[in-house]
Image (cartoon, rainbow, N blue to C red; front, side, top):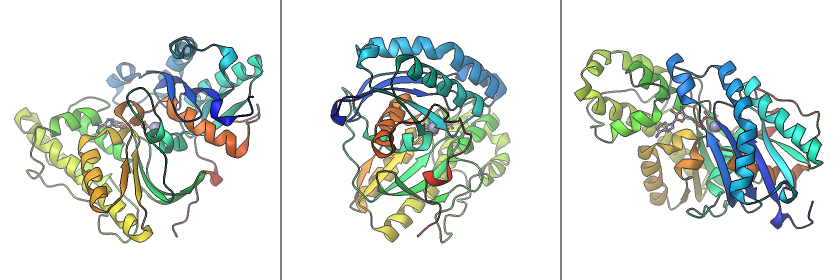
Amino acid sequence: MPSSNQDQLTLAFETSCDDTSVAVVKSDGFVLSCETKNQDQFHAEFGGIIPEIASRNHTLRILPQTESALAKAGVSWRDIDFLSVTNRPGLIGAVMVGLVTAKTLAWAREIPFVGVNHLEGHIWAPFLSDAQYSGGQITYPALCLAVSGGHTSLYLIEGDGHYRILGSTRDDAAGEAFDKFAKMMGLGFPGGAIVDQLASKGDASKYTFPRPMIHSDNFEMSFSGLKTSAHQYLEVAKESAQLPDLCASFQQAVVDVLVEKVKRAQQVFAVEHIILTGGVAANSALRDQLSQASSQWGCRFSVPPLRYCTDNAAMIGLAGHHVLQRQGPSDLSLPPLSQSYQGDFIESAL
Ligand code: KG4
Ligand code: ZN
C-alpha cells in the first residue's frame, strides 16, 4: 500500500440486498466509476425481494460489473490498493456473494480488503463527490437520519466511527411503509418513487393519516400503523383521479414524523449539521422539507444526489477508506452477517 492515504484507491462491492454495485473510489470520496444494476424487474411480480433470486443475480453480474467499473474508471488492478465490501447487515446469501468475491480477489491479487457495515456506507454517501457533485466534509457532532427500505434510524455522529443511535423504527422502516402503501394501492414494487411522483400532483391535506409517535418524548418511530389506516382508502384508490391526493397525504404523514424527530434531536443536542441519507432520502418532499427546516434551525444540510441515495458501492468505498484508517484490513475469516456487530453503533440514548 502507498504510504499516503490521500492517494489510495479502493475497489468496492455492495450486494447486501437486491442492487449489485461495484465502484472505484479515491480516499477523498471522489468516485471514478460506480456500476449499479437493480433487480426490480425480477422481484416486482412477487411484490417483495426474494432472497434466492437476489443472490443468483448478484452471482451472474458481479464479475462483469467489476470489469466495467475498472474500465470506466480508467484503472487496472495494479492501481487498486485495497477492496471494500459490505459484510453486514443484509440478506445473508446476498451479502455472501459480494464478500466471497472480494475475499477471493483480495487473496488472488495479494491486496488487503475491509468489511464494511452497509449502514455506515449510507452515513458516508452524502460526502462522495464526482464530476457533478461535491459533498464536502462532516462537521462533528452531526445528526444523521438514515431512511431506507430495511432501516430507519436517527444517529448522533460524534466523530469518525462514533455513531450513537438515538432512535429507530419499532416496526416497519420508512421505505417499507412506502412500498407496502404502494402495493396496496396497486402501484407496483418498489413503490416509493412512484408514490413520490404521484404525490407531486396531489393535495396533501385531502386525506387523514396518523402521525405515529410524533409527540412521544423520544426519538423512536413507528410506521406500521399507516398501512392499517390506508386500508380505509382502498375504494378511493380504485378511482385513479384521487390517487395523487392519497399519495401526497400519506407521504406528508411520514415526512412530518421524520422532520419532527430530527427537530427534537437538533434541539436536545444543538448540532449544526443535519444529514439525510438512504433510499427514502430520494423522496422530494422529505429532501425539501428537511432542507428548509435545517436552514430555519441555522444548520448546514447534506443529502446525496439520487444516484447515491439508494444502495451503491461508492458509499461502501468511502466508508471502506475510513474503516481501513481506523481499524486496518480485515482477516480472510471475516464472516457475512445479517445484523450489525454490537460495537458498530452505540445503542443507548444520552
Ligand atoms: O437504501 P435502499 O436502496 O435499500 C435499502 O437498504 O433498504 O432503499 C430502498 C427504499 C425502497 O423502500 C424504496 O421504495 C425507497 O427506498 N425509495 C423511496 C424513493 N426512492 C426510493 N421512497 C420514497 N420516495 C422516493 N422517491
Ligand atoms: Zn441501503
